Image 1 (cartoon, protein in one colour):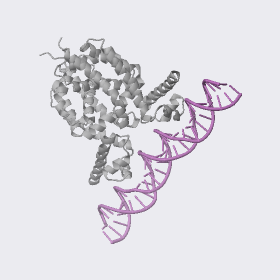
Image 2 (cartoon, rainbow over the protein chains, first blue to last red):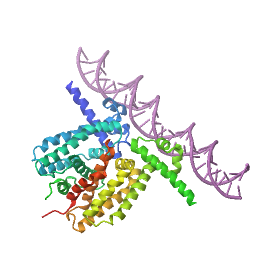
Image 3 (cartoon, chains in turn brown, yellow, red, cyan):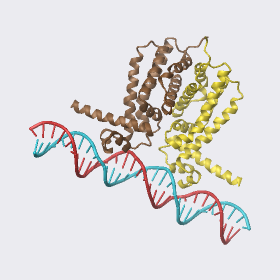
Image 4 (cartoon, rainbow over the protein chains, first blue to last red):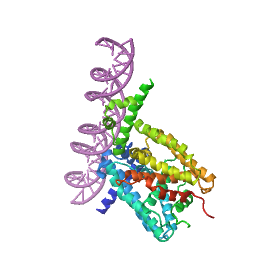
Length: 200
Length: 200
DNA sequence: GGGGATCCTGAACGGGCGTTCAGGTTGCGG
DNA sequence: CCGCAACCTGAACGCCCGTTCAGGATCCCC
């Protein structure tokens, strides 16, 4: 039974990987289920054995892969001292994650703002985890005295997330190839300036 | 003849305003041309007298209204001294602009990242103007000594734009009503920290 | 108030695509 | 090698929607 489960899981993943590739290249709305099936080397109908709706493909890939990254992040960050070091590590890990899987990054960056109710609801848990992670780092940094005590945590989270997000989005949409992780120093320098405690 | 042009322009604008309203509430992809027509109080076919394709509605509204804002911005900013004051004014004007027309802001924030080739190409001029405006402010700030001379202007532009953009997007997607312009002080405080010249 | 120009209408067309399902294929235990 | 179960297939269905256009309404000038 567990053997069969594994096979099921593998096939599911195959379909998701195909969907990531297809959505990354044409965008969700301009990709058909048939396109995904062809990329996966199976018939269109087969996809409906594994996923109930086209939207599920998008939702599941984000919840599974980006969600996993967010959960791993929490563990890895605990190994750094709170404050600036932890903030830097968070940025580093995000850049590395997206650089490691550019197609997934493309899909996530472009479709995270989808208005479609099913998709919005489906993405919510992962987005909340992502946001929660950033807010935690900010709060810890305020407590340990590294960060500006006047910070509005929610606003600062949006600020930091947005800045990061845009850098990743440009990278993902750019024709040029360059290292995302290579931007870490400059990026951290600006982020640090934005949140650190100010001299009187 | 100019009288007729005016009438034409007015009708066109009526359609665009209707499209903004409809796209803002359901998103572009889930809105039909018939929805826009109904909102505008005309027949679906009439829209095709004024716009060649559905995509044109999206492209034209952004180029017309957001584009105008970007051009106005350049003029208004000249009245502030370069550097921090001008940066602050730029943020203020952006917040005010989006707050003034929330529906347009919704459409713009959500669809600016569209992958669809027609839309991407159509948005490009306005986005370039937007980006160019930010880069100019940053460069001037570096020249006058307010900003960190180590800044990578393009990266800093993405950083600042992204931070702003995310704050506006949250506002636009939020159920809660709160003043966007009211965030100016906190937002500027962070932005300032991110780009200002560092003490040795 | 006639007639031509302009503008608008909305039914109809055509294509695309998400989804289903009857039937075929595969694999496995006996 | 049989037969059953699990799995896969892809043609077909139905719906939606962008776009067109022939005909009708409106306006305006003489």
